[in-house]
Length: 133
Image (tube, rainbow, N blue to C red; front, top):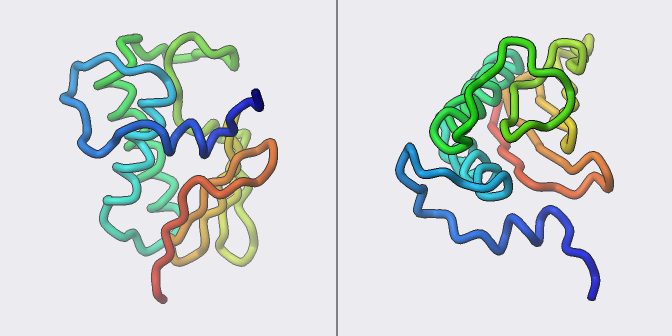
């Protein structure tokens, strides 16, 4: 049997509805919740504002559902909790775009705040949110 890719795994998770804060969820269910929250989030108007939204919503999901206390310097090895994008993995382009890398994703944020989240392995689109200028 073929191994499922990230999109297939996420698509199989029944969210919405979101689970109540305090309910421990596995990593994939937390990711699905996170993407759902990002999709429903209010429009931003800049790449930096979107980067902050992406990081802040991840912290909210992990605080509610990981059951792992945040560490100030967590290191790169996964220990039950996902963390915001590290500054060393954020590239700010001259045209106002931001390209950010996480362990599993590549996030492309346009100058107007639109963004796409792709898998790092095969550039499969997981979430796209487009804004008109």
